[in-house]
Image (cartoon, rainbow, N blue to C red; front, side, top):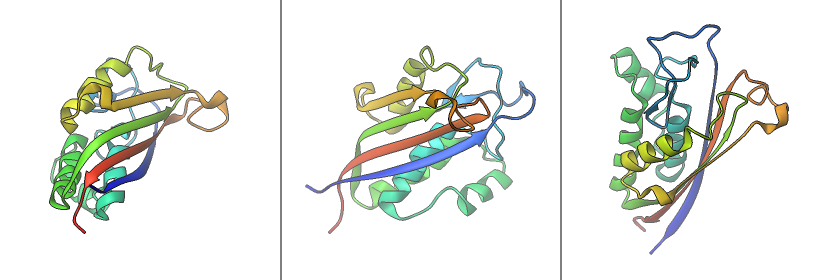
Length: 164
């Protein structure tokens, strides 16, 4: 069985003001944190990084023209973009084995959010929660995200299978 790995990244800056009609959604988990990310979608930076990582395996990009077209059609739920990436993965003969996220942000504080994000991502990906790793850091304030201007996420995926 072939095992492959890929990484994805995404980042979004915070909107100048909180918009209660655009809650902070992270990994498909709707938080009660009063922050809004700037994006034409729901701005789910975690699912965007995961979608990009899966595109690294399938070589079929979802974010960009595909997702932008979906947004223009009223589909702004990032779980729908992830669903397309997972369908592409399955069509290529792979199955997702493990997901790991590294989050850089000064805010919000992730300690209490991680369990909900892990449960949400594991459900969306049909993985046990123990196969979804999540770490978060402020990055010591060295980057714009570490200074509180937004959130940056790196995602690593491990897949098995594939067509030769």
